[in-house]
Image (tube, rainbow, N blue to C red; front, side, top):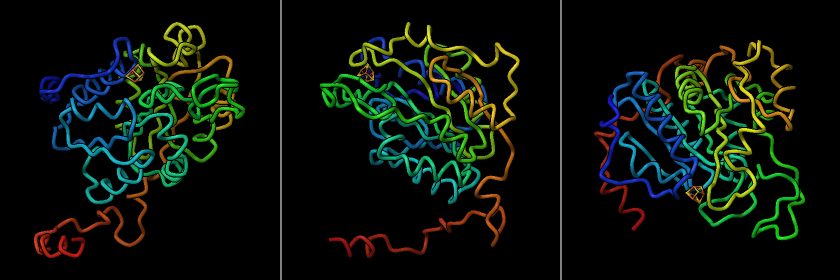
Length: 283
Ligand code: SF4
């Protein structure tokens, strides 16, 4: 697969300066560097500005309901375990409506790579407080400041038994490409939360803010094989780490199905199904 193979006639419609561009670029670079075949890749999108990516990234894709891309992706993987299945979702998508699916994906260790565009705001709906916005955030939905503390996705994923937990930054494409490649190669549920700026509606968490508040784990002597140390790093909300927090090699869901170990769970041969007859039931 080459970069041009991923192009569609559509052009990105994100605001100038949006962090979505950096994540999109990193996804495309990771796919081409891994030398995957186009027909091997399925990307399932949630609803949010990130979801527009489905219109200008030519792989197999599915854009579903808000908060629900993870179970769709799990179903795709169980139907055809040879596919590389990626979820592109947002922070509102994943950590509000989809939080149950997030935790279930982590504990099931489904072989899916989850890339969360975490801009700490609802951008598509013009700037409401999101689950990762800081306490006190003033926005259209919380005009006197948000009361709740933010969701900590990294701590949740590590504590819930995550087998691959990482965080990237849209303005650090070099690191992000490596994280996405490692996530795709990881056999299990790979969580990659990605800090990104919303240039239009989040004037707090700008690119400069993220640069000032983050550091790269690769620049320390950190080894991502200790869950307690990973949790400690995840709970530090002053100095925000990027890189791989934790990784292990427990079996993925589809490898651990007792009945027919390793086989697809879903018979996807539909040649003997009369679709017209099935559809008539709903009309
Ligand atoms: Fe990006 Fe924010 Fe514009 Fe959405 S509203 S495209 S997240 S800058």
